[in-house]
Image (cartoon, rainbow, N blue to C red; front, side):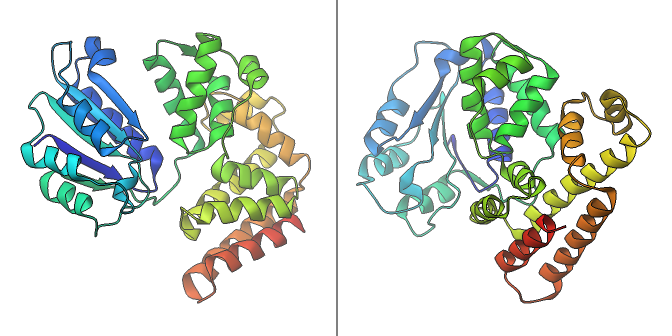
Amino acid sequence: MSLTLYWGEDSFSLRKAEEALIEKIIDPQWRSFNLVLLYEATPESIAQTVLTPSFAPGSRVVVVRDYPGLSSKGEDEAPLMALLERGIPDETHLLFSGPSKIDGRTALAKALKEMGKFREFSRTKFPNFEEIADWVESEVTKRGGRVEREAAEAIALAVGADQGVATQEIEKLLTYSNTLTLSEVEALGCGGGGDVFMLAGAIANRDPARAVVLLRRLLLSSKGLVILAMLGTTIRNWLMVKLLSNTQKNPFAIAQSLGLKSDFRVKKDLEVCRRWKTDQLKAAVRLVLEADLALKQTSQSEQFVLEKLIIKLVCL
């Protein structure tokens, strides 16, 4: 049976796997006809969509995003269960995608795991800044647009690893212009929480209240060690940029030394470096290492260790 279930907190990797499956099944020239995305779907709408034949030739994919019936008992699932028992048409692939957690006790979750392929996307790390910007470039190109590297990095900085938000922002920006420049992205603005990048920004601005709010939000879906690893990478990047800026005044030259494709992030980091001394950044790196040991070797809660780290960092 052509049935797949993707779920987990790592939305970035989940969306990449979803897109890979779609590309494998659907003929690119018929994608607009043979790809159906369902949001806020009901058991009836899912069954009706799957059983409705496509007007275009080739295989089709029906993607059901964030279906609530997988995480809690809700509506009568009889129409959907009847579809699964009857069988999905040979030319159709049904993909349930998106919920961060599923309730394995529900009849639907049990049926999907028994009848189809399933994969959990646990967040073991955040994609780094360059990976997110690369994905933005790829997504814009797939949609027939063009994006300057600096514009792609501006989007990455604004939305972080939330690929769902990034997709919405790209669609919004391409509605305005088919060629995205940095000035257009900055003028129109991007939504999203920015994940760890926003947390690091609050620390850089020595704003503990905002940093704590962002941290608690991240802890709802990510492990403390994962958050700390990304935060530590960001602070080490600040230190490297600070040290290189002592001998290289050109941001692009610094970017080349760091192996970056543009100087957008370096310019942002230089703004941070003007507010932080070299000794403070070195001390910040040591504090991150101490927090890492505390998380691994003590029974202190993740929230306590990381909030304590934030207070120490903003007080440097």
